[in-house]
Length: 166
Length: 116
Image 1 (tube, rainbow over the protein chains, first blue to last red):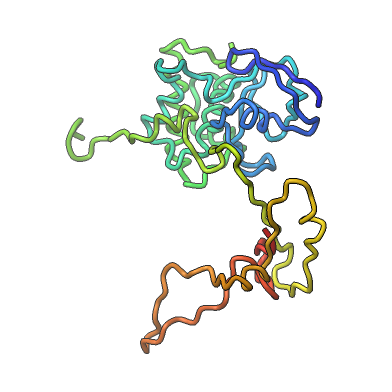
Image 2: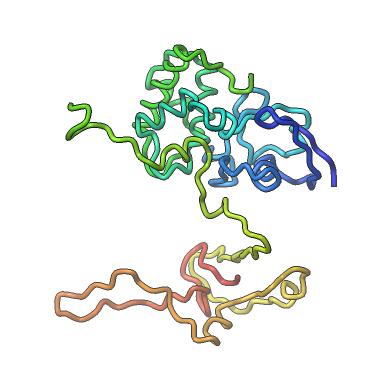
């Protein structure tokens, strides 16, 4: 099996994978980082969004081997363990931007990418348009949109980097 | 709105683990020696099952068991239960169509499980 190595949440990791292994399988099964979810397996739901070299990507649609040498950030890498939450995580919690929580990691990772591309002052229309690759089946979009707007503004105050991978 | 009283926003206890990726959904759970199940499902909305050949699947390495509707009915495993039976106006119980966990004879929707 081919070997692959990359940096995940700041740590160097390596493993032997089948050529067909998806990035999300590598993260969930090899590294046991189960915060990244597989909702649909077909690039529609966005529950598997992670950052690859600072850019949001659906990890069910990338091969692990394509990410050789890449810097990956998953939901587990946003905040230090036992440290304060990332402002975007805090905003989701504060604004009830989740119910069952399954889509939430992907929502948060996509939200950070929206901030990276569109800045900290996001209007509702922009957020809704930019979020069309993430599905929530609790139909919690209203509060998700509110959370992203608030989280984007809170990131200015906290000085959190716009790219989590930085 | 009062900060502590009626109408105050209350943080949910479970949200911390969800926003940090520490939820434990069924697919996140792994136990030593775990056996995984795969379902073969109907691609047809309504069709008769003329036959299921499981001989090759049974012989594949690592396969613990292959089951079909025949095995289930052979073991007297009955219907998927209806969670909420209701009664008609005249008091008679509602009519419940057979709904075996694995289809035997007929599949009734796309995704109806035929083998396990």
